[in-house]
Image 1 (cartoon, rainbow, N blue to C red):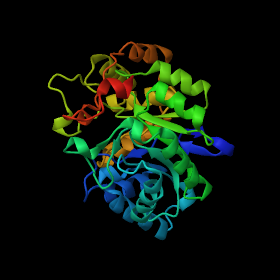
Image 2 (cartoon, rainbow, N blue to C red):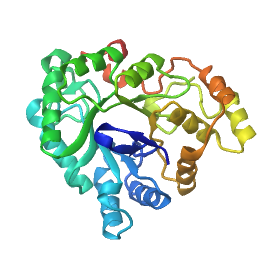
Image 3 (spheres, helix red, strand yellow):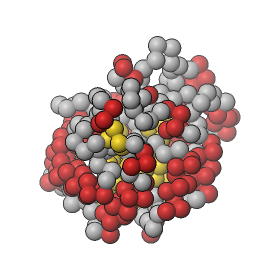
Image 4 (cartoon, rainbow, N blue to C red):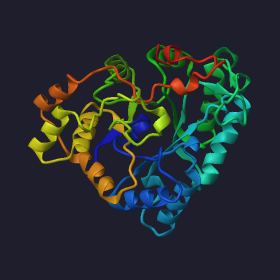
Length: 316
């Protein structure tokens, strides 16, 4: 397993298990199997609606002596309805209760989008809150307090464009450790990658395999497949590995964290093995040539009638 350095001499596993789209009744077994295989990094979020089941699996692993809490890296996220100062800590504490943990390793602002409290996803314009109504500094100061209280070790963000990340870093007393964004060969985000490497921020790649199992309502009729690209298949066949392993090895070679999701034991093992694979320069250059600027998760679900948010604003 490859580890990346974080602040104060700590490290985090570069490959983790994503739990988005893992259904209730499946995710506990997947987390338990992943820990048995050797995964030590689990990525969660309350909007995935499965943290309670993840917590049961974690608790079982601790009670059995299979793994100690300090051996795991657990990430969760602040949902869009809890960005005001008074709502940040209760949101984290709810995740801690469901995950059956005393602290998180990493707590992330999930989207730079605000909803009214108690609204999981808006159906009417008045259920949104405008971007200006809750300054990023307000939410971030509340996040910093969580670190000071020992409820999480590190804090960061998801889905921040470069300008938004730079603005946050100028205001922050505790710098964001992470920006979790969509990253794969069709969306390589080179400017963000270079900025983060130069400024001490890590990147986590979500949807590294193209997120082919996401809900149908989030898909486009003509979207390109990463796993079926002839170049990816050619490299996989040449090396005797799977197309998914090619994509994960490419992501890890860039110095990013990667969190593929699976509930299939064989696929969990296959994904985990990718952490020990290496691609040669020719393979990497061939994959680098696949850039399309294509987003699978484009945020258009926030563009309902009357919403103050647009895809163009999200990504700058």
